[in-house]
Length: 340
Ligand SMILES: *[C@@H]1O[C@H](CO)[C@@H](O)[C@H](O)[C@H]1NC(C)=O
Image 1: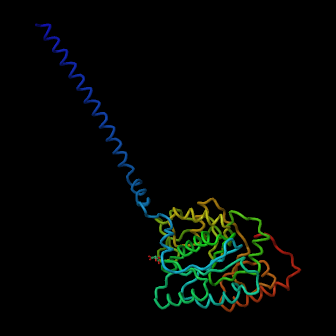
Image 2 (image 1 turned 135 degrees about the vertical axis):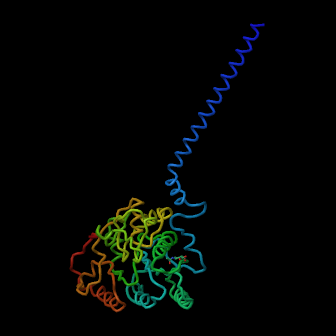
Image 3 (image 1 turned 180 degrees about the vertical axis):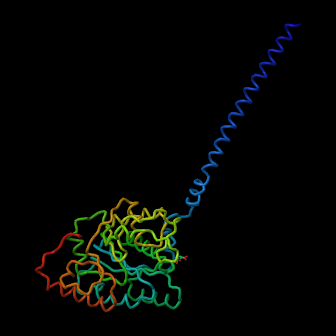
């Protein structure tokens, strides 16, 4: 009988031991989990930041290209594989600037065709009347790419992204020049220079670069160039070419567009291009061929300069006359074949 009791006790003890082992294991597991949760708690601010930055399904973090293309406006025609496509940012009301460009450096009459083309980038005008005028002008000249974004200064980045995307998908020129409607483009030299003399055929991103002290991000909310820390964290932009004019080879443009899917756009168009170029591993190249307008340019300077900034419509006409004069007047001067 005593022996039987002892056997019972042994079983009970065993059971208790097993139970406590089980309980201990459970507690241990629970503790582990708790620790993980508190760790998550500690990192929650960072995690939360990531969650905010991450796109929801179907929402684009970078440039939303599809939204820029929506709308009924027919795009200009472009021949495939031209040497150069010139994209000119222009406000809806700048009719005169566009007309002067059509009459001067964008005119194709009497020149080798199908090698280069000029297209104006225009957004949605706030006033219905202006928007109608743009539609009429687009139908008449066939050289305006109307995008589905409000045409404001702070939307310039979207304008350029829309133009680049269209150019690289629909036209695929060897090179794309982005410029403004108050700039002169030396179409007498540039297409030939690109086709015959330029040696940097891939990865090209060239223009007038800003010195380091002019690459500070402007945090003053009242400024035209204000960019918040949420939109761009560093205090300095990477090297970038001024928006007055820069040239991209097609492969560079394609890589830059790829990067744009995932980099939040900022309203400073040319700085954004620099950010995307850096992201795509493309180095900005400096060239003195992109310059500010200067009344003292001599005729033969027009053999070298490719983009001149800040011209009135009258100055556009004078610059174009000088370019044509330079054809014969500077025939003997040595051709500069580099970008510098
Ligand atoms: C840019 O364009 C979009 C689309 O039209 C518009 O919703 C937005 O308000 C514009 N942004 C600015 C700053 O003008």
